[in-house]
Image (cartoon, rainbow, N blue to C red; front, top):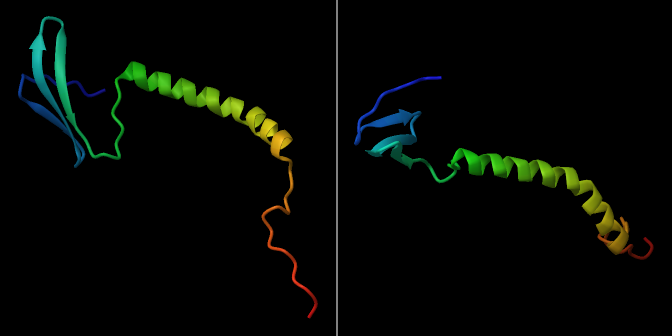
Length: 88
C-alpha cells in the first residue's frame, strides 16, 4: 500500500485519467474529489461491497430462474429457425 500525505488542494494522480484531490479536512473527516473517465466506476467501499454481494447472489440464482422460464416458454429450439422451403 502506498501511503501519501496531502494538504487541502493537493492531488494524487493515478495513471493518465484518474486524479484524487483533497478538498477539505474537518475534524475526523477528509472530503475528497475524484476525477475519472466515465467508464471507470467509482464507489464508496461499503457500496462496492454491496454490489459485489448482490452480483454473487444474482449469479447463484440465475440457473433456477432460467429453468422456470423454460417451463413457461418451453424449450422449442426450432422456434427461431426459418421455415423450410419446397423442393428443388
